Amino acid sequence: MHCDEAQQLISAGIDGEISDTSAEKLREHTETCASCSGVQADFRRISQQLKSAGREVLPSRLEPRVRDAIARAARESYVPNLTRKPWLRQVAALAAVCLIAVFGTWTMTRQYDSQARIEHDVLAAHMRALLQDNPIQVASSDTHTVKPWFNGRVEFSPDVKDFAADGFPLVGGRLDYIGGKRVATLVYRHRLHVIDVFVWPAAAPEDVPPRLVSTDGYNLLTWNHGGLTYWAVSDLNATELQQFKALL
Image (cartoon, rainbow, N blue to C red; front, side):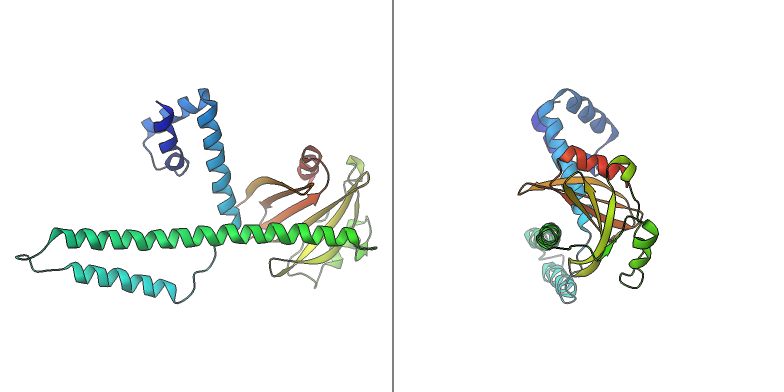
């Protein structure tokens, strides 16, 4: 299998839309081709980003308008058998494909925009806290003090743990506002570094593997687990932040 052929199959392969024979050939090729393996990794990362972003609800008026347009195109393509023109059906089919493409592009754009807003909100909340004299509303390393403090303040129960024995002591918690919702924030320290862990209910129940984002000297690590979305933010290096995540 050549690289051109492999790269045409990568996206469909990730979605399970190619034959077993093609999938096996693609696997064999990517195991020995660093370039195609990198492309495949990028596609998988983008796929995970879209899944973790959740689904954006379509405007209530958009779906019936698209359905009406498809139905109208189908009606206009119908001509009695004696005078039917094949190209009219082709035009109707093309119109339907274009409308479906509009749906897909609109949804993907909204998902990317939503993810970018969350990243911005999370980093901004972390930096605001660093500028405050006391960024902690409940200051304690006792999990039995911090966890009950969130009762009635958020509509879920965050899992609160202390990792002092591993070099990541819990120092307290606070409330933040991310993506238009109130969220729980757990605050940890590692040497002189502050780690904020933002937690809120996930849009979907499925677990999502960790994804690392680095920006402006900060590392942001996000994942979904147990029906909750997590964002850990710190100026710790990526390796130490991932070590911390493994403890949660």
